[in-house]
Length: 241
Image (cartoon, rainbow, N blue to C red; front, side, top):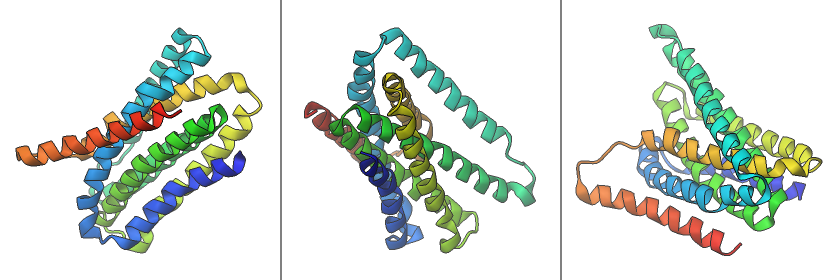
């Protein structure tokens, strides 16, 4: 089981690093937007149709609801603290932005590792579905962060630090989740609730704001299509549990 968790926790960072190496900086935004839209549809659909219902079947629904609410508030507070802590001094603004990106990446990927561990401890099929979800949103997230690091003046080699931080965070989260949850099975449904809340939060507050609205109706329709494809795949995976 632990080997599955380690592999699943590592695959998204390696995939993102490979994409960053193969895709030039100018093409990152072109490829990251469709993947981001797909990830948004996949994450939200998987959360509300599979992960959260699974948690509610295993524990009291009101407690699960309170855990989801608490997770949303905690993630919002953390994001606000990072934003308010950034310097407005011109000389330090780039450095503050880089540290903010890395801190956010470490937190998100640590949560992803916890998500993966809790999912595999629930069932292998849910673990697979969550791994696909993490892969889709984390690759899009790291591509976007990599592009931002390049615009902040880092060279491509130094910009790869975001992939290293993501890998460390996700693997650490997976290991912590495995050793904690495997000895306390009663916590698994609440970990799943945290997972669902984290996916919804990331989709709505992190991935979607990266997308600029298009005045072209055809492009808008294409964007919506990518989201629907993500929803369809999530529902397909959930229906085969």
